[in-house]
Length: 364
Image 1: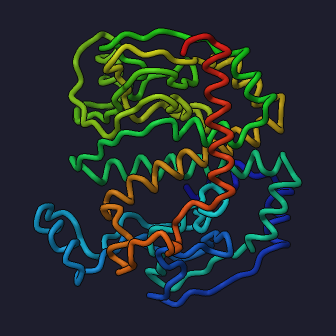
Image 2 (image 1 turned 120 degrees about the vertical axis):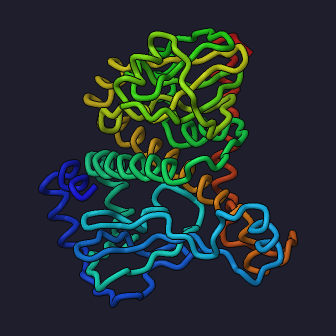
């Protein structure tokens, strides 16, 4: 993790960050980012250690009830630690949600603070910098997702989502990007029972589910990853723990495009489905040759990863932040994590784009 920024950013990128940031010392135990608040800076940890916690109020009756059902739930659960070179405070650049964790200094620490306004302008004006920045963020999110899934053990995280992933994608991409995906993509029918993606095995394409349902699972097999991969390819059943239900609109197979890593989960078709497959090699060439497309693509991957990570962490905290905070449920009350009108407008436009894609391919 500590090498991600140095590996992904250029010397000019790093020089810009140094020139437009300031150093901030954090005493041991001090609060850097409270839950429910958006940061006004992006922070790079230069020295020390930070903790990332999910909190619940022990005085809340609903929390006590759920704790009685699930003894694994803690009122202040440390889900990860941030080490030198890692980034926090990136949420405003990849999500409309507020921060759902509390970040504190475990020991005396030093952070480099980059004002959000300056960074937002840089990302908008410099497509090359944006591509490298969002790629680095996507890599960090991929690491965090894998670590969190491993840490959760057997906790059930099954969910049902519809269209959300593809709406985030279509809301961020340009019309020309969508035209290219449709021209390059191949529609494929996949039958129930078929495995689309094997954990720790190469992926040939980026997939968008156009119709049907699938299941995502992680292996509970203790054998080494290479042996599990060959067993899966040979058709031998691998014991897996389902972590998500996937449906129309989901984006799959994106991990190889951020740092050539192998998939960390298996995706199996649970009802006859239709997918749009964008071949890996053609997408890789497009990402190299079209810097504008590259910046938008890596931003999309960062957004998807951020939302998946936040959904998992919300379910750890039962996603009941309104109740925990003691806030009323009212149409006249504005909540911190409520989606604003401009985002809803973008999502509405994206939904129309998806319907248009379906009609263009005559598969509705």
